[in-house]
View 1 (cartoon, helix red, strand yellow):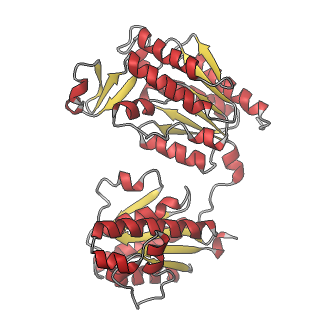
View 2 (cartoon, helix red, strand yellow):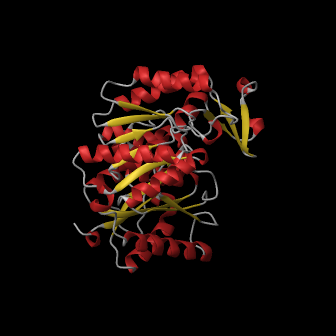
View 3 (tube, helix red, strand yellow):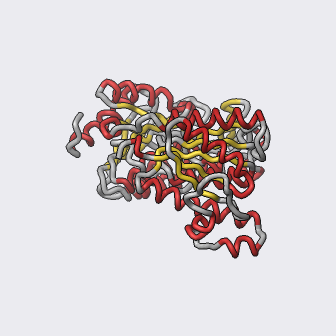
Length: 412
């Protein structure tokens, strides 16, 4: 099915904001697009335009029904259920190849439902939300999705000249975005995911140069939590041929409650997808906190370093590194594909080289020892007598990865 045969999906609470959604629909139709509409409002519908999926269908998709939602009068519960139902329905429509973009609008509840509905759509399919909350922190609701937020300026409640202008612009934006073709399979087959941090930038830059010279596109993900989650999500969507996971520091934040945790699913996607991976315990010598006064009291006596005024690093100790080494090794060992762990014996971050602020050979050996002990027999563990940011280490990583790709019958 060509992109011109698909529709733009409109998701929203048509019971209370029918007039605004009617205008949005008119603007999209005026640009030659077709639409599919989903009503997530629990108090009724609209007569202003045809609705393809009414709220009872949305509730049913989440295992509930409209009678219960209206009878319970529990707003929070209703929003959660309608969000889950909308997500299920939208995922189904995408799987059926019926939609090329999705747009929603709303205040607090409507925004939550719209963002939930967009979670089942992969990268590259336009996702737009006109919302009163655009300037708020919606990172948890957005997650790792490529969702565009547009401030509504005024509440999405009845038409006025300001909202009319912004709705028309949002319609124009989603229509234009929907006309852009998604990534080709050839592009995906020549793409490598790589993880980075300020403390591993030199290594990542050199690896990127070497892989680019070999004809690959390299996509770097900042290991700040969201970056790791996004990388894992795109790996699962089949966007990469292989992974060069240099900066696995997010596992340390997950263990110690740092601000850069990517959650327990970090370092699992490549194994689950069965694609080659080369993994480094990069920056697992540190846990990230914000300003110094935000460090939990339990860590007050630990080795702390101010990387920036709003970034405080805590050096991981031997006990933590033993746990981290085991976790990393076990995650990588789940892979049915070829996997390699490479250990830079002279330091795993910029600040961990000899004489550096986080230089701690005993802690590093606890990490390396746990990796050696718990790596599966099919996982290659390579020890390099270099620092992580030495050019020689980058050459080793790239040579290792390209060697794996050659053995798995990939064109180099």
